[in-house]
Amino acid sequence: MPPTIRFLGAAGTVTGSRFLIESGEKRLLIDCGLFQGPRELRQRNWEPMPIEPSTFDAVVLTHGHIDHCGYLPRIVKRGFSGPVYGTPATAGLLGIMLPDSAHLQEEEARYRNKKGYTKHKPALPLYTKEDARETLGLVRTAPYQKPFSPVPGFEVTLHPSGHILGAVFVEVNVEGRRIVVSGDIGGYDRIVMGPPAPLPPDVDYVLVESTYGGRSQEHRPVQDQLEEHIAPALARGGVVVIPAFAVGRTTLILYHLRQLMEKGRLPDVPVFVDSPMATDAVELYCKFGDEHNLRVDLLKSASCPIVTPQIKLIRKVEESKELNHLRGPAVIVSASGMATGGRVVHHLKNRLPHRDNLVLLVGYQAMGTRGRRILDGADDVRIFGRDVPIRAEVASIRGLSAHGDADDIMRWLGTARRPPRKTFLVHGEEDGLKAMAKRVKDELGWKFAVPRYLESVELS
Image (cartoon, rainbow, N blue to C red; front, side, top):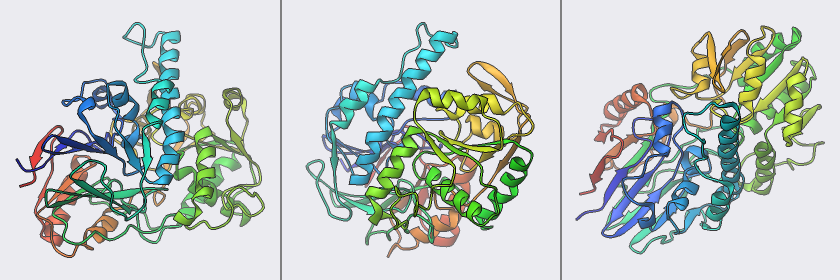
């Protein structure tokens, strides 16, 4: 039997990245992400995997975003005990992300039980902080661009993908087949991260993300977009709420806010970063300074490019609750970026009903997420079992995504020395997958496939 790839996630959707490569009795899982978004997707997190996790030999991660690593404690809870490999920076991020994810799981279950917003009595967390701690004990590090063998018969090489700190695309050599799993590919000429490495020579199969599908990102300067939306809101005394991913996006937002304040294009107002994870992530960006373009010491406020004059980093829950009574003008940056969970949900509950405020969406909003509903102009949004009216101004900007757009993806695919045998389009929604398929066919002339959820493909 030739090796196979089983698409356990990120097939027909942008979430739940999980790809199982099988060779004989050996099984290597690339990524182990949480499904996020609408209920039918989130329900997959609770369903048993079609293959018992205890039979997986190892996991290799592309990076530390929750939709690529956040299911790890669940498979550990279900019997997986093998090694989990990632770059040193990814290992550092796991130490932040997994305990935080577990905390959110426990807090949501506790809150639902307290308020009665649950169909299950009692509501339970998907996994606990103890499960996360056990998972972190399995983590091993691997360097960039040096082959290693996580499972006998498999040779793996990690190549920089330019997405976030520690992010890679994964090259797997097994039974004479060379497979590349893109993870999330970053862009070219970015402020923070460098460009993705070129594809290795003689690739047979490529799994490529299609997050942006056929779309190109906004090329208008990000600071112009921020000033256009934020300045009027601050002038009328409003509070600006920015849902932002704690890793990467928050750092970039703070950088641009500081630049605008220093230039006098925005007033010097209090900026609250209500995310312990974002604070920890800043420290990691300092520790792994050779992996990005911000060369100054991020922890020294005199030279830090992301510390605004009145910044306050919020860690404690009590401090976060105090922001409910905050009067503008002010800015609150909080996770999660699609408003699917985290402290930002509480801020939206308090700020959405008031017209002076602004909710500024700064990243991709997947179908079915709370952020997507707000972006699409809904009159209200459901938060903690209640419909919250949307009277605040809602705006979005482009150009901050850590994902490369369609042009970046095509540029990266174009680094291949020869066409692969087949290209699998993953990590995209229906329209995006169709648009990317058209570009791969028309511009590259490559054979492609759009795999279905749980489909298994022989690499003949």
